[in-house]
Length: 191
Image 1: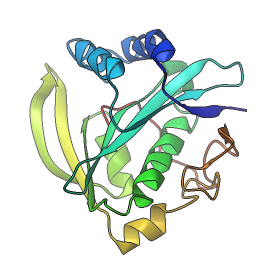
Image 2: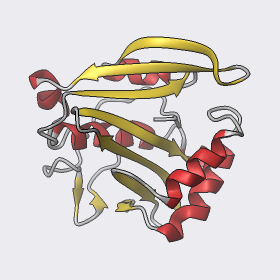
Image 3: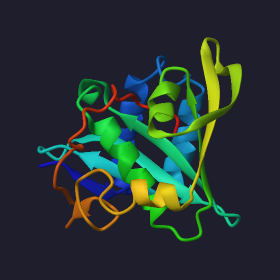
Image 4: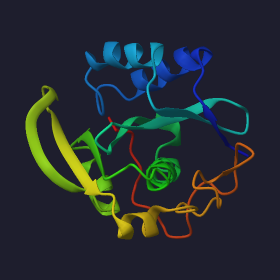
């Protein structure tokens, strides 16, 4: 059964390989240095997803600033596991973590045109689009969603259908990889 675990420095090489596998479709090559720097000093709650063989197949995190702005950061799934529901599941999990943060007032993220529609289906609205914002042909979409009572009800404890703790994890193990509803096609993302 897959597990969701806190990132450790020993996970770095596997995550950089996942990043490389998602370049250039989802990430511009110059962003690798930014991701590597983040892995050297991760902020917020950043986790890795491991499959049954303990191989890392994805990652994603959240941070919240002093003003209550939560950010979804560095979410990605290894290409062989895209389209399996794990990207959908990870998005719901991260939104569940934010719903459990009483200080959170809104959630923001940036992503490319490849995944913006995925997040709009979750309830984000597009704030701006910058053509070639990440690199040639990779347009930056800035998205946001208020963290209000409706958000907390929708994404609160067990939003992904995997648990009742707000993390969707029981003892670090996924109860189910994704919700009953059929998810839109998952993608890796900047968020």
